[in-house]
Amino acid sequence: MAGQEQTQLTASVPDVAQNYVGGEWTVPADGEEHSLENPATGDSIATVHYASANDVETVVDTAADAFDDWRRTPPVERIQYLFDLKAELEDRQEDIAQALTREHGKTLSEARGEVRRGIENVEVASGIPNMFREQSGNVEDVASGVDERSVREPLGVFTAIVPFNFPAMIPLWFLPYAVATGNTFVLKPSERVPLSSQIIFDAVDAAGFPDGVVNLVNGDAEAVNALMEHPEVAGVSFVGSSPVAKYVYETAAQEGKRVQAQGGAKNYAVVTESASLSEAVPNIIGSVYGNAGQRCLANDVVVGVGDVYDDLREQLIDGAESLTVGYGIDEETDVGPLITGDSRERVLDLIDDALEEGAELVLDGRDYEHPEYDGHFLGPTFLEGVTTDMEITQTEIFGPVLCLADASDLGEAIEMVNSTRYGNASSIYTERGGEARTYRYEVDAGNIGVNVGVCAPMGFFHFGGRKDSFFGDLHAQGEDAVNFYTEKTILIERWNQ
Ligand code: NAD
Image (cartoon, rainbow, N blue to C red; front, top):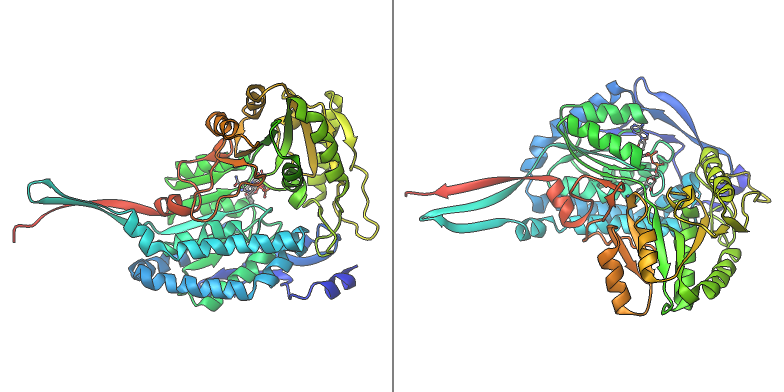
């Protein structure tokens, strides 16, 4: 199987995940070595060394040493490196996509889309001089002859700690803004998928950033704790599950850092009687089963309102049945594997619990076995008769499982949507503006889609998130990123000559 994989993947994907520190590739001095498995084939594909607290100290010290010169580099010069980074990433986009498919199992088209969304943030951050100008305040004569303004300044070293499900895009929600604003940066990828970051950092290296400005450290919780404890780290951007997001938010805040921590999700989609089902159904199927459901914007509970239920049910079943499960490098694959055997077991347990609680199984993907690959696959699964008192409607599934519920009217549907402790995203399918407006107004979620199932904001908007889906106040991307990565000094001036 490994041989077959080699013939189908043309990109050269590194087989050792290294750190990138001060412009040099290094393997941690005393880091433990771990083997990485391709989740679709079970093949061993690479090794990664987890950094120890000492290794992290070296990385942060290096980034801290680079800060003073980088801060003094004019923003218009800093963004030249971002233009180069964009070009280098463009050159490597197919390699990054293939690395993603290999380490994560997602389809190549999903992987290619992910890389584009990452590069988009490099493009947005390249406008930093203009963003600074737009966001600067200047009021003259606050008292006679006295002018007041606010000046933005970088803070020092920022770190981003990121999850496994979008290993190329999510680092780029942070890296370009942190360095464009004049900070230096340390990325800590998910230890489950460190390979695509290797190619991203190959692009960083080729873009020629001054040594120490952009750094990479591989590791697990030990590295995260060391990053949060290091006195030279000014702020932490985190994306991952809610318990860890909350832990990082609390711990880093206690250490006096700025923190933005994006957590998990439980997203509902509501389909009203006015919806165009021919548009809504493929959209919902893509949202639920795309990336094998391992998406923080997946709408894994679908609520049919009133008479739409029966038609919706039938068409969703057809849509789910038409999906092909497999390894993402095969063109016909729609649904890749789950990231690990444990993740698969977790989803199986959630399905079993839902059945015990009274849900009905319409499509059962639990016993799916791929004829060729020995990966962590689950076939598309479809449950109906779910209610908001079941675990499965309150817990993030992160697997290819659709839960169908019904509501008598939009008000009842909105109550269901708001029943969870999460507030990441939600979608409504309707052709009526009034329904869409009520939904946007009453649903407590940070990203709302109207006839859009994966409402991922463009780089020039912030990425929303509320309740247990986000801890902090300034979000990733766009204007919020500029505010997160800068401090504002107030300058009050009176000149006598
Ligand atoms: P995770 O919380 O297990 O890991 C995320 C990061 O935290 C990794 O880098 C990991 O090394 C580190 N980490 C894990 N456990 C830790 C601990 N005990 N102490 C310190 N650090 C620790 O998340 P995951 O499984 O990689 O990613 C999936 C989760 O991420 C899902 O819940 C998903 O919804 C969420 N997510 C959220 C968004 C969003 O925008 N809100 C985006 C993508 C993913």
